[in-house]
Image (cartoon, rainbow, N blue to C red; front, side, top):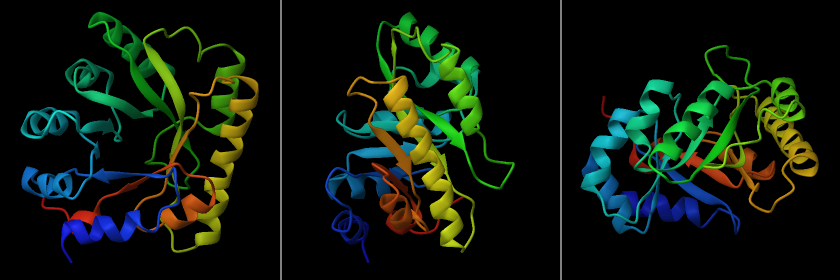
Amino acid sequence: MSIEDNINKITTQLPQGVRLVAVSKFHPVEKLREAYDAGQRLFGENHAQEMVQKQPQLPADVEWHMIGHLQTNKVRMIMPHVKMIQSVDSIKLLKTIEKEAARIEREVDVLLQVHVAQEETKSGFSVDELLNAATQGQLEGYPHVHIAGLMAMATNTPDMRQVAHEFGMVRHAYEILKQEFFTQPGFKELSMGMSHDWKVAVDQGSTMVRIGTDIFGPREY
């Protein structure tokens, strides 16, 4: 199947209001152009350097999302290009994003990354840390940063009941935050689900699914 076929196959299964993020890390620009020609406008990159290299090679209406771990010293590099940073995993990073956005006088959307997976290698706030940060006012006072929701990865396991449970925990945290701290309509995104578990994520309320392999095929390292 072509990249266009793969995109169509996924998007026809997505409920209305759920967006597809094409995860393009380690895939060449030619493949991204194929996806663009098939109507895809939202791309997710895991590495700052790669986003900066690819951005000028694609049309200006592409919406770039940073979905991988972002070091504070790489924020300045991506700030002119990125529409959303989905992987905000610390208050320190949030403060750096605010500083760099203010420096170039722009606003940027972010998602707070929640750690619910069993793997220690995955980063993010625990649910308790996130709710504590909200309670202590640490998620307020960023005029150039718009906190638009949460992002999470589930444990890489064939047990979809566990995956559903973990995504359910994120959904629950999202609902508490929305009810008590982010009452404005802009707090509306739940980025959950990848190639192997996106259908479970959508069942648990995901508004964005991040899919790479099922669109572009195996990565070219």
